[in-house]
Length: 186
Image (cartoon, rainbow, N blue to C red; front, side, top):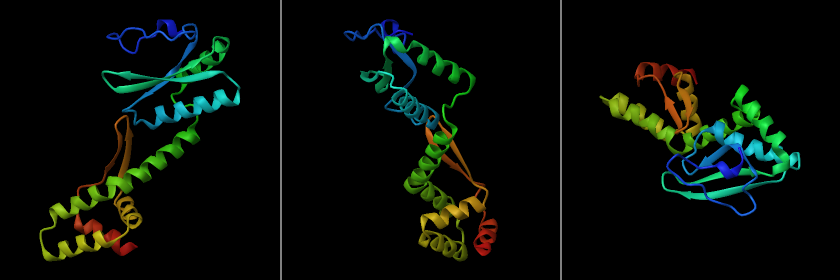
């Protein structure tokens, strides 16, 4: 698609950019709320591919009433074949580089665990502690490092979900018997 026909949504008007109306739009964009590792990875990998191939492109940033801002990649008119290649790759498989995507998910997972995942895990046990022994176990958990807690979360067969909205952690319902088994196995 050429930029001259671009509107962010059906509710928006085209914003003219002098000398760029005949440039092509890459089929990847990001906005303020982009959390998807697939989108973020493709955004970076696509730019890396263009840099490696010496493709002339520009990142254009726009304010927007719905999402705050968004960015698109405009590619020079003489690189239509490259744009079509990326479109074809993405139509066959949604990820441009599996390794880059996987590394990004691992990094995002680690950041999310550090930021809030471990607290959510702890609060699940804190909320159900109903006697002195269970409260003592929760205190032991609170004294552990985040890496140790992650190891226990994994031992409890907790799962991690990456979505367009970020990272979420899902463990089995808190159960002190299973928790003790994991603690004793360490």
